[in-house]
Image (cartoon, rainbow, N blue to C red; front, side, top):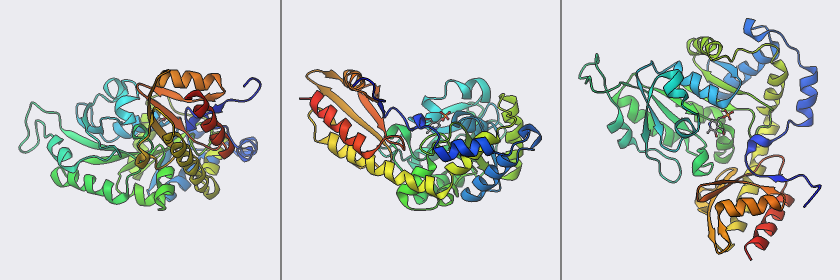
Length: 355
Ligand SMILES: Cc1ncc(COP(=O)(O)O)c(C=O)c1O
């Protein structure tokens, strides 16, 4: 398919800024944000905090930095953090937690929906030296990290009650424990569950969410939490090299990202993902767990007479449709820059390839 833009299903991070965002960038009022002088950044932070029901917020360059700062502001060096075994924090953020945060990660099992088990959390909480009943063999557990939606389970959602149950179990055993929510795609979860994002954020002491995935901003994430934690986050962002200047040009896009038309639009991506999953499920050699297709991410296993997941991704790419092969699985992610007609085209191409 020469001369045609590829249909890019590798990730929702490939979305380009919308025409409104490009206009907003040109017109953004800016200042030096390291001095707190950028009015557009300040507006984004206030609006994000309000939407998530938190006291304050800070704009950061990326989701990885949002998670790292959130961990560093709540988990002292030498402590231990509980993470889902397949979480982005545990599997896809380089060695940041060992090198920068100096914490030990304690991986927890997840079910196919990305849900944690309260009993395992309770068993995994450790009290180290210095705490009543502490044991010098252990690092003290300081933080429980949740992820909603869960990327590597296929964009699965957890309800506020499910998150509350595991957080309450942790806090009942260890009242000092804080909860961080990696809500890179929190608005996808909120739209899928038809609840306000603040309802999902309520369980967490800190929440980070990305503006630059399905919400189409060219860059940026936001951490929301208590005022004193966000003051600390400013120092940590500086230390990690993430202090930014006239970054209102990006925050202007972020304000559009968290506006109702953009967040509500995510439902279209979810419907496209569902259509894609149901179509693929009909094809030979493809195994899709349709129950886990809840938002805009789809994983499926592929093995057939012509090859494996890597073969299929390569063959699709040659036909003008891009996706990711991850081990035995293929990942496809729907977003604003993939239309329903293109979803149908991908189904036709895959159908032809697997004949
Ligand atoms: C669940 C989750 N958390 C964090 C991130 C990191 O975001 P970023 O790529 O902006 O650093 C991602 C990126 O895909 C993600 O899927």
